Structure formats: structure tokens, C-alpha cells
Image (cartoon, rainbow, N blue to C red):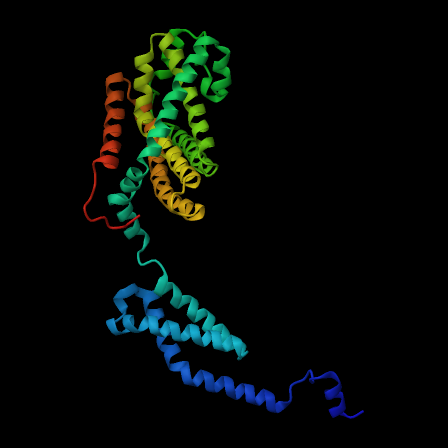
Length: 354
């Protein structure tokens, strides 16, 4: 059987004739030559923007950037459909990806974003979830009362609510002197840095968990807030029973005004997401969750900052300042600062919209 018969029998030959290969090569070269000038110009503009931002790009280049990007994207689509050579396709894929980032990517660096976050973005996000903050605060107050009442009724609840690592000598039956000793200052600051790192890790973990649980319609976040503050209620009952309620409140206020407020904000951010999913209003559930998630994420970045501050306060001033009045002054100052920043500080021209 002749070669022509074999070709007609199987449809098409598996090996392209030399003429077809040459034609494809010519077509690819012609395609590239017709558009290569615009590709190279786009490449040069993107390279300058990657190296120095907008400072190294002229106004004419900025005006041409979207047009050149669309040409490159269209060329890539044609190159794929016509199966041009792999080198051309790889070059266009890389160029289009880099140009897309410059055309549609973020326009600000980290420091500009952080400046906008501090000077208005964070406080505005907190104010936008004020209703969820009220709900979270109510849950925390209720949890504190529940913890106090449970332990007052049955001291066995103390051991169920307070973890062993927090109880140590602070447990029912301890003398006033022993409890007072747990509130005294630490001699020197040696080892407090590691203690601060541990406290930050613990507090941040609780806050992140309270936020993450909000996706289950916010109910687990509320339960977590109640459980955590039930521990606080149990400890308040213990020290109040030994006539050390004021001293314990002063000891706690140094870091507690920052830490508890941060946990409240984290729980409120999670609750905000859950509430928006349960009651999306005119938006779809996904759109409502996305919008509340972005707002909650801004709040959570700030909560991490608050946990760092609380860890430092817990490890240093709280362990080195002895007088209750001084401790109350530190805690009250930070509480006034946070509340003023969140609810009174309202810049007219925010740098970054959240």
C-alpha cells in the first residue's frame, strides 16, 4: 500500500510535512514582528514601575499602560488559539501577569497602608461594628456574673472554670496572706520578657479563636466570651472573699483594660461576620460575609496590636508597680486612650478607606 493510501486510511499523517512546519514558523514570526514593538514598550514600562514605582514613569506611559496591557492580553489569547511557538506564549504569559499587577494591583505599599490603618482605618472599622461590640460586652459581663454565682454556690465550680496553670496558689481555702502574695510585685525584671511572650501568645490565641468561631453564625464566639469571663468571675469571687477585691481589680486593670477590650473586639468581629451571614439583608450571603470579613479583618489586625501591648503591660508594669492607685492609673489611662481613639478620633480625610 502506498504512502498516500496510508494517509487516506488513517485520516491525517501523524508527522506534519516540512511545508506545514515552515508555514507555522513564518506565521509565528509574522505575528510577533507585527506586535513586538508594543510588547517591548509595555515590558519597559512595567520594568520601570517594578523598579521605582510611579516616579520612573512618564504621564504618557501611564496613559498608554492600559491600552498596551489589553493588546498584550489579546495577543496572548490569539497565540494560544493558533498554537504559536511555546517561547512566544511563555513570554506573553509572563508579561501579561506582570502588567496586570501594575494595572489592577494595589497602589500602596505596606507603610502607606499602615499609616492609613492607624490614622482612621482601624477606629472606623471598630465604630462600624458597634452593635456587635455591645452584644459581646453584654456576653462578657454575663459570663463574669455567671462565674461568680456558680462558684459562690458550689466551690467545685472553681476547679472546673479555672485552669490549673492559672489557679496555682489562688484557690478556695487559701489564706489572705497567700492571695496577697500573688498580687505583689516581682523583684527585678529578669525573665519577664519570656513571660510577656507567653502572655501575648495566650491572649492572641483566645482572640483569634473568638474571631474564627464567628463564621458559625457568631454563637460559638458568644459562648467562648462567656466561658472566658466566667473564669474572671470565679477569680473575683475568690479575692473578694478575702477582702482583696480592690487589690485584685487594681492588679488586673494594668493589663486587663487593654486585654479584655481586645478580646471583646475580637469576639465582636467574629459575631459581626456571623450576624451578617444570618441576616444578609439585600446582599447575598457570600457578599455579606465578604464585606463583614474585610471589616472584621481590619479590627483583628488592631486586636493583635492590643494583645502585644497587653502582654508587655502584664509582664512589666503589672509586675513592677505595687500601689493599687498607680495600677488603677495605668489601666485607666490605657482604657481612656483606647476609647478615645475608637469613638472620639474621627479624621475628616482618612488616608485609606476600609
